[in-house]
Length: 543
Image (cartoon, rainbow, N blue to C red; front, side, top):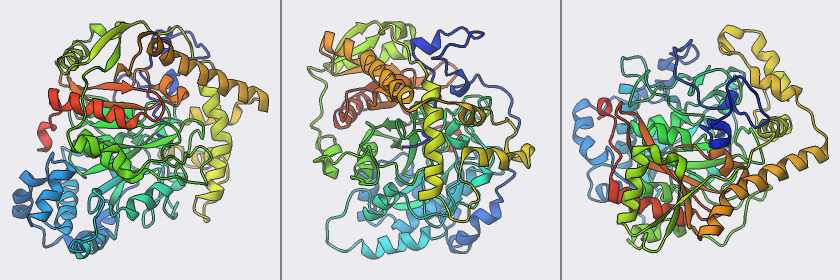
């Protein structure tokens, strides 16, 4: 649900073409991806590596460099099905799998010339939990595919045993119970490895800061171009950590581009589901209208498996849908090789046909039997987009503090956070907190707010529905998070899959956008493309 908000919206035509010196009511430049520039802060001033590792250091003493090297060929870049096969064959235990990832995180993530700053905290009980999975491994009861798999959660998702900070010092001691989706993962037997860094407050905070920065976690860096390429936001740590093989998979959150952007920028698969498919309860919010969590993985089959584990009806979430799905619904056809693009019709945005990677991807889709129709983007705007987020967060953040935050927090509103940050501005907000000021200063009456949401929702649907109906399309093809804002307000699902690298080596993603609750279909389309193109390459310095 969340903050996934990444409003890093390299927006579609409406925002892309807004003149820099003219602010329109659709302009989201303050919360969109920024050109790369020098960082004010690189390493965290609020994480002590020794403290992060204290709880597991003793238990890691028996895991050697030699064991790490032995396991690399069986773990790096492998999908969940391959990992289970190795577990069955006795190549490793779940305990060894967890220790492999912990060893790798410690080796690469902080305090060295390859550090990525993608992890904020490690689950202190993670090795003990892995041992429990090993104990249950020989129980003949059929287990979910996520069983025993180490998963990272974006640090705006409530998790027992680790604080949920949203990257903010104000939430440093926000010790909570589990979010609904965290409980779902545990019920399915997944292992929570730790918490991933993010753009602070899901990038709806500073307005003039780099993607991937948080006061708690420091500046997340892109493994394909450390201090060169943008990480995307706000689920920066989730995207970076999976690109660098620090876990099997991660969960991010999105409001408008926050999964799609970092997934594309870090050459991983990211799914922003239909609003209502996954619960948002216990996730630090931006907008109860648009927020959603979603899976971020190295490949499509893992994405489908993680989505299946996250899915479940949450009666406390007003948008949660009680669908007739079961977990295997999302991955069975892929696993059984029953997905195809034959007879499928996709709209290719004419404006994007100057991108050689996009053109190459379209060629691959055609070779797999898809029909491609060139389409013009609909001339619809997204008026008062920022106002919607402001007004939602005015009420949604206090509701989180009341219902899901730690009781010891002396916070009940956005203004409380602003006041907290003023006490030590250099440490808590080196890039300022412009967007938080915008939140507290925004106003609208009840009817104005309803009208605002209705206009945005209808315009978003129009943007996709008109070409889809006119050309009988199964989906629209985009790049990265270029059309994330339209998909957000339409509440439509979008999935990005690696499409290659620019001449400079920067990753890009091919993004499939479909109608509500088409996740199964989008995953199938993306899997066919992924297997035919095989574009993802692990970052060379992290192999």
